[in-house]
Image (tube, rainbow, N blue to C red; front, top):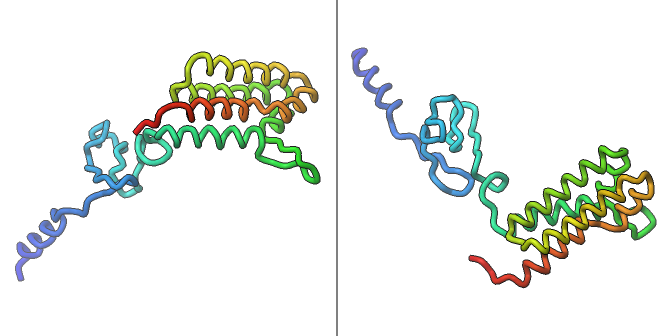
Length: 180
């Protein structure tokens, strides 16, 4: 066996076609075809390298979501904000909105910003302007009264603006024809 035949075998083995790279959606991903041409060291198409893959724009967290998935996401967030926990020994439910709201001013600003994001998502789902206005009124009332120490925290627990907004959105979505 000569040195040339060993060289031929290794180059042939290296140049053999690798198995396809499949993303989470079951689609074949082509290496080097990313948004940056694969030249930057990061391939945003999800093509694998020695360090794994980065999948922006694909998968359940970053990809285009269906209406049902978007609604489920904001519904889960609203439940977390308003009714995630039960006060032991009672039937009183509260969420992290009431807990974060205990931090004066900053806590209420944070929860109001999250509530506004829920309204923005409702608008992205196609909610009409009059519905968005009602939702914004709920958030504004919750935010304004929530700033008052102690009274505002009790109001946050009882008023549940995010759950009200989800109920309003759900009623509207149920009246809409199904989109395929």
